[in-house]
Amino acid sequence: MSQDSQHGKWTVSSSEDEDDQLPPSSSNPPQVPDPGSFSSPVETKVDTTYVEVKPEPSPIPVLVVGSEARQQATKNQAYPIKYESSPSLAGKRKLEAADGSGWALSDSDDDDDAKKNNPPPAMTVPSSKRKKVVNERPPSPHGRVYYIDEPDDFFESSVPCQDDMFRFYLNKVTGLDKKYNSGALHIRDILLPLFGTLKESVQFNYCFDLAWMVQQYPPEFRDRPVLIVHGDKREAKARLVQQAQPFPHIRLCQAKLDIAFGTHHTKMMLLWYEEGFRVIILTSNLIRADWYQKTQGMWMSPLFPRLPKDSSDTCGESPTFFKRDLLEYLASYRAPELEEWIQRIKEHDLSETRVYLVGSTPGRYVGPDMERWGHLRLRKLLYEHTKCIPDEERWPVVGQFSSIGSMGVDKTKWLAGEFQRTLATVGKSALRPNPPVHLLYPSVEDVRMSLEGYPAGGSLPYSIQTAQKQLWLHSYFHRWQADSTGRTHAMPHIKTYMRASPDFTQLAWFLVTSANLSKAAWGALEKNNTQVMVRSYELGILYVPSAFNMKTFPVRKNPFPVSSSSSGFPVPFDLPPTRYTSKDQPWIWNIPHSQAPDTHGNVWVPS
Ligand code: TGV
View 1 (cartoon, rainbow, N blue to C red):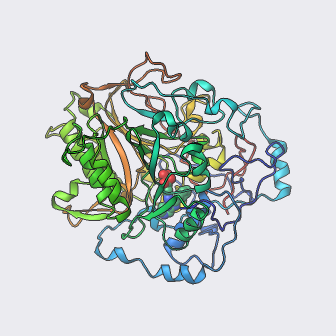
View 2: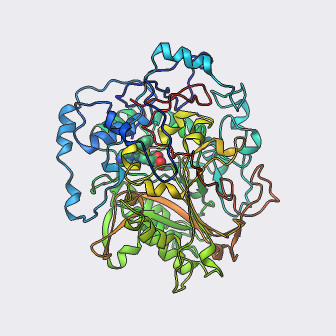
View 3: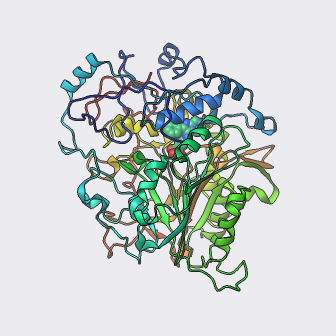
């Protein structure tokens, strides 16, 4: 997905101190007449009359006939940068409407959100209203200093401690107190020569700004070959091809997406150096907005040295079989462009890796293949590599994500059935009592009071159409932002899943991944549990204590500032999680908030 393509009506806001320089994702909060206050208890009562009044706003109403068109529009809207008119998509979109192919073999009764109408927040700011809002602007909790550009010290070297056991890092966030960025990495840091002398790289991702990406590479490596692995088709692909035009060193590789509504979410860098090879598995898109004021996570592999020339292919394996699993994941693309990388990886020593790879790759899997991908893969790893814990039914499962798919009319359909069973797996115990499940997802107030304000909601694409069918889900919800000063002021684009002790001081395992809370990402059982169907490409890494010769991971008490003396796992949000009160609502991106201005004095009115 390229971000310079968008057909919606985005009007640049002109509130006084924003001027011409807009923050990366700044889409400008929209305004329409107030539809009435929207408030409901945690579990019930979404005001559905609202939906009837404005059933399906869409940026291209006449043309949106197929789900992919909607999907496209949604993606485009999410990452607006340039205003670009898009000529004559009508014919193409109409053709796409007919291609729902992959459906025939599936017996999933529920759809994921991908199929649904996710009307994006196309935003207009009538100048009259705009003034009014500007005048009503409340004092910003972040003070008058709001960084439009990254601050001068932003790119100062922040080489992570090389003895960092977990190799888990957050991104640097613009506009937060410096202490919260200690130990954090910007994309430019990752590509610094001190991590290796780059020869070639591969960028797996969903959304790309190739011109911006090129600028993130150090000048001396800027013309080294880069392979882009993406999932775009048709117009979106054409736009990506066009983006790549000025860069002869960039080649594209389109990942096959044969099952309807699948997406290429995997975010990974393969970096081939004079000195060896490195893998980065992360949660950020390759666009500036994703590296600006959001919380993102990454795992950086050790530098993998080259194996001696005559080594066999199976050499250089880690205790976690990371080499085998990475090669299997790459092979699943069946892409000729990746063959040379598969060969290269075989020639390197990945034995120092202490994490397990958890991937999803589209397909319908039966028999032993069911455990290769998605949540059944996670289940198998937890079964084999974690130990039973006393009192295990009191150890909560925590899931934290930035988007939510459709998971049916009640919890038994997927969440409390198959997915919870996976997350509840520890060791080989026969009894599997249901642990507490805490789901972390930003509330409206979290988004409103965040560094980005409402525009952060443009990357939290939970739609009212999906939400209103699963009000039961919201009773599991906990806040992302526990207080209004810390790092959680940067809204999450990170996704994490973990099992914590009852007092949240210990972890039985921790996972960071691209996979949101959706069946498309994690897979769903079909055909009387004899088949699992996965729609999307996803990638994450699992930490289990046994791979670190530990019983559990202690949770790092004060993750900020990062100090070499502090130990324990750096969980990127506050524990214990805070449950939504009856006043809290999950962020739903196509519900307007015209009465409560955000941290920039703007309101949110999706069209
Ligand atoms: C979006 C961006 C709003 C299918 C896929 C992509 C990502 C995430 C995430 C969530 C959804 C993503 C997407 C969309 C994308 C902003 C909406 C649809 C509709 C990502 N893709 N809309 N159908 N869609 O949270 O990680 O960043 O990779």
